[in-house]
Image (cartoon, rainbow, N blue to C red; front, side):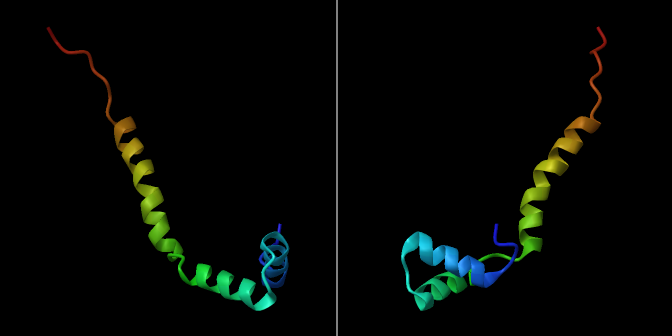
Length: 65
């Protein structure tokens, strides 16, 4: 919706929460500074995929009687 435009985001934030310009910018900046880098998130999101790939790699064989 904002296409990476900070000014548009600040305007929508102000409209939604009724904050002043400086308060909205301060809240947005503090939120952005608290985000983790993408590489950390990719590790967290990648492990379930690796887990399912390992499970799929096992072949089911009927036990010999």
